[in-house]
Length: 379
Image 1 (tube, one colour):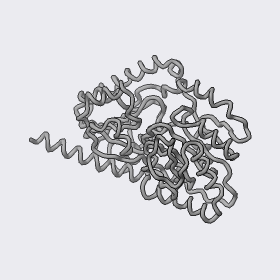
Image 2 (image 1 turned 30 degrees about the vertical axis):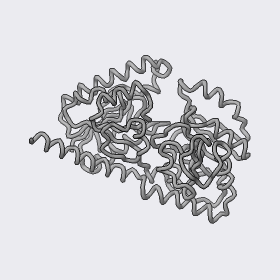
Image 3 (image 1 turned 120 degrees about the vertical axis):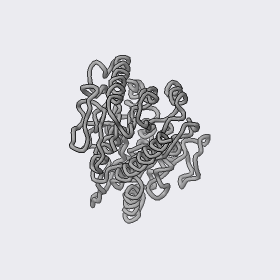
Image 4 (image 1 turned 180 degrees about the horizontal axis):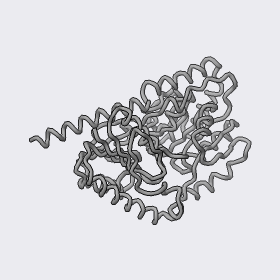
């Protein structure tokens, strides 16, 4: 098949620092190319160039990393629309079997103008009105969800499949160490929905060390200002935004990953990346977390509040109290029980959340869509 992949323009493919969507697009381009498909990747000019796909640069560098777009969000928005115009022009001057959109609602607005079958993967929550207006105006288009829970906010779209994001087991090897795992890890954006403050509160309450790896976007500086008083370099350490090598060590050497998500997290790659390393996850039972984390087997799920119950989990307390109890349980586990917990994590990712499994599912879906398109044209 000849496949066009449309990436977001904020970051390079793959990203240098924080970025989930960008890694998914990279693995699709790389592994589909290895399978023998012809892949054109529409992305930033500073993206990685490989023999497995053809990079078609749309902007010189990632908009989130380039002046003046770093701080001027209106200019960044204009650059995105200009980029989409460029993508649309180029795609319609080529022949593709399928066009796969990862650039969200802006690109979806022009899906009807693309001749080839056009499918969009939702990578974000479907809760923003102006974005949903575009999706609802195109509700019969082809959509892929990255968790079943993601569909709850826009249930009437034409979802053709749920395909979970994949994690590269080579990038996240299972960590077997003799020395004691000591710190809790936090890995996310520094924003209210990711629960950085709650993670810090757990560290203070349990008197366990928390290493916070988080990027701070322009829009989240006010929240970061509220978080900063928790940084005491005794229980709470702030690492900022980290690269891949530091991120791997951050996860591998952690006793657990704590993720007090306070929104409907569509997937959460940090869950599977941590578990691939053998690191159990403690998370609020929001969004996709109950689909990814096996309660009591690969970590613990905790209800966010008495008013927000999503399941009958091992930990009966809610909120920060519940998170703290889960942390104490993991730290109190006998060595063999904790080792088994780590093995459970790795095995769970191996069975369900590898990049190879993800790409196989997309490839199968592409073939199905292409075949249906051929049949409809024949009639």
